[in-house]
Length: 369
Image (cartoon, rainbow, N blue to C red; front, side, top):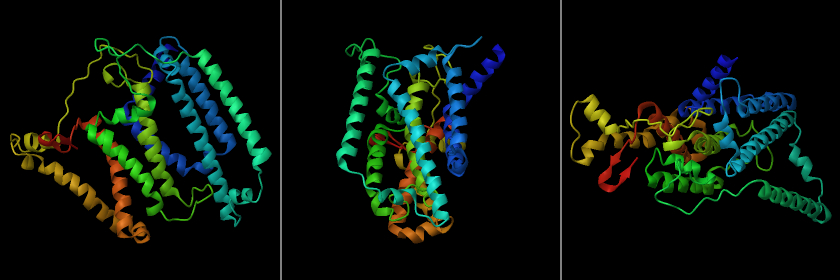
């Protein structure tokens, strides 16, 4: 049995390596949307829930030859408990929304209106229905917060001390995604440009997406593309980054498997390399030019081609219908924002698989891509 438990731990540690975890999360997202009609059924969802409960029991307990105390400590830390609750809530509400979407799609296919259309005909009064509901919710939340504050210690540490820094030193959970991006991008990209584009992208959605389908009701069949892009950006690029920063980043900001012991002495040599070094030194066997333009011309052309040639090819192939529906300007905005979103995991994968640090390295102006 000890060999079996060690094998199970080894499998989970292998699958939670960052490149495998990102790839599997994208595959899982596609499978969830493709087979939403199957797994959102209450019986199937119940079986999946039971499997997750058994997995949680296995993860929490120590078994012969294996110890999960590191994972338990990460889960039970007072400042990590909200993250666990949020992850569970996201799983439940994702199932609930997709369940309603599947039901609406089945009704629309038979000529019936969506469930929300029937609910609009029901009249709900502010008094007493809404007021009583809000009162009960306020009481329940207040009780939960009071019990929480009594049972769990506030995660407040000693004042900052330069001679004694935490290892690992982590940002609050809502900044862990940005902290993870700082490993792969320059601070101006990870801390300014990418978060700014998220806000701008949310602002321009009503102007570039004028499709009336799905307004006011849940649906999956009518908005598969939009739902996939949203779930990819939210779950893969944000929630997964928070999960990695919370449970997989250990001392020295090194990666550790989900059941791997956090070894303070773990050292991973950095062998990062830029595109300019790959082309000039490795391929051409020449030293790097001193002038920045010939040195970085290959990386610059790669970035420019990514944002110009790829949209043009997409518009003439599988994106023809989208190009006709949106027009040139809106199509260009949507595709380029999508390419920026896609570029984030591509850059991360290039770092994990090929030790690629920067595509364009311009220390002369303190700008790197």
